[in-house]
Length: 125
Image (cartoon, rainbow, N blue to C red):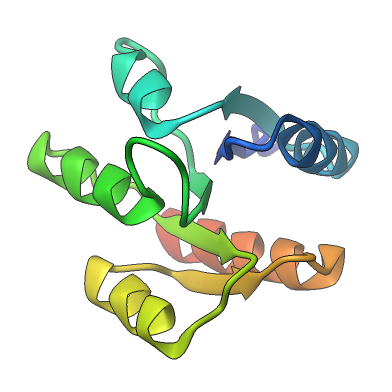
């Protein structure tokens, strides 16, 4: 039996973060949520997640900056970026940052789960 996949969700919108967490839990993922990148960076000793789902635009530290800071500390965690403002330049920056997927708000549960499954299956192979 496979252990549940661990997903970290980073989004500054409490209602979106809560809704996304509920959706992922209903799909049998283990979910930890963070209000911002700094909160995630402050967590040490946590088991690394299988995937991070992060908003792009957040106060203080963007999702891209969070990913680069994680890489600087030797933590290469596959990330699915989400944005309510899917400008082409943001999508390009996501690719440069190493995003595994870039999704647009409002999210489709089907698209999100497909992106997470793609990430976690690549990671476990």
